[in-house]
Each structure stands twice: as structure tokens, then as C-alpha cells.
Image (cartoon, rainbow, N blue to C red; front, top):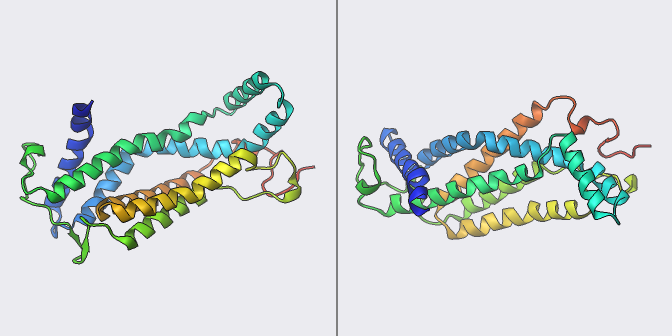
Length: 255
């Protein structure tokens, strides 16, 4: 398993990092990480796109899910069947929303190891493809002052804020108190969403205080690109999705 990870992820990312480093005139590692982030985001684009759409659809279905929970609260089997039928009708797979985290994690681990080994190593030859030129050593300095081999508190906070912004952009507005049990974003789902909204940014900052700024920079740039992708998908939503259901009016009580 370790060999597969090394061949499929670690080595290609390592060589791409060195290749970008070689072709950039100033050999700025920060710019190299930006280019690397764009490439990785492009590879993950279909998966993250599917996940964003699934998350939006799940949020739009919350009123109907709440209604099913209330109708079949004492009949778990019928409740599960009704939920599955609802997902099938709207072509929503709840598991799809977890894909980006699961898929991005190996890339994140690989990049962490690549930055660790690439910056610290004075002998890059053992991990380089024969057609990639060996620069000898990678300078961790970006923009003339930012050392990407050490933790950077400012960058860690920026990454946390970007994470909060990304999570907030996926959170729907709260309904009025009188909207009743069928209102959006309620009960257990609402609690979990709020926890993720604040816990993930805090965790990002804590990890940013401990890890090299290069990895934190990647997370910040990757999250920013994720926000752009969310905006693009939201802007191009097609009519007929659950949010256009006339029975669901966000922030209003439907008589």
C-alpha cells in the first residue's frame, strides 16, 4: 500500500513541484505551491463539484426530511424507506458530500511529505524522474521574506478564515421562529452544520500553528479555489432542483 501511495501520489507531486521550481524565473516556492494547488484542484474538480451539488441538494431537502421524520417517528423502517425514496426522486446521494474530504486527504498527506522532504533534502535525485532537472536544493523563502519551511501564524489564521468562509457559504439562512417543524436547517442537522462551521476553522488554525507554512499556504489557496467553485456551481444552478420546489420558501412560513 505504501509503494502504491509513493508511485501514484508522492512521486508525481514531488516531480511536479521540482519541475515548476525549475521553470519559474525567481524559483519562488510560494508561486510553485500556487501552481501545484491549481493542478490538484483541477484533478479533484469533478469530485468536489459532485460533492458541492450533493450538499446543496441535501440542504434543500431538509424540510421534506423533517416532515418524514415527524410522520414516521415511531416507524424507523418506513422512515428509512421514505428517505431513500426521496433521495432517489431527487437523485441525491448523501455519501457524495463526503467525497472531497476522503479524496483530498491522501493528496494533503502526499503534499505534506513532499514539502517536508523537498525543502529539507540536499539530494533530490532519488525521487526525481530522469527527465526532471535536479536544482540541487529548494529554497523555502517566498516573496523574499516568508519562510515556508516553518509555521507562520498569520498564514494559519488566514487559512482558518478561508475555511470559515467556505463553510459559511454552504450554510443556508435560518428560518423565522414561527416557521414550524418543516423549516429549513433544523434539529440534528443544524447542530452538526454549526459544529462543522466553527470546529473546522479552529482545527485549521491549530494545525497551521504546528505545520510548515508551505502546507498552510496550500490549504489557504485550495480553500479559496473551493469557494470560487461553489460560487460558480451556485450561479449555474438549473431550474427544477429541490430549491425551486414551490412548497419551500427560504425564510418564510408557507401557508
